[in-house]
Image 1 (cartoon, helix red, strand yellow):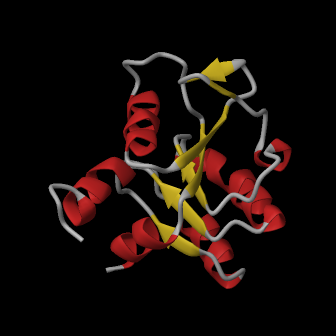
Image 2 (cartoon, one colour):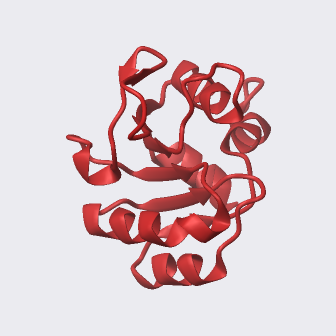
Length: 134
């Protein structure tokens, strides 16, 4: 399965649209991924820090390679994020539950990126790799 391959192969995750509110799904998902050993880069131009990590205003500001771009933004806001992900050399676009943008997905795939839409990365990790699964 594509999701399992992505979660096993890639470790650097930019979380675009993350909230500093620990009760928001974006923050809970990022916290879960950190606890699973992923390196998280919070992306939100309106906050300075999330989960003890500095936030970045955009993908281009992240000083390390980003492999997975995990998107917590409305479907209509995805295309500019995909454009930037392509520009920085990301490997994966992951649109969270409820986020679907076929045009952006096609553009990302045509640029060589793997694409997951309308799925929660936390739920997929738990299903594929949680509970001692290998």
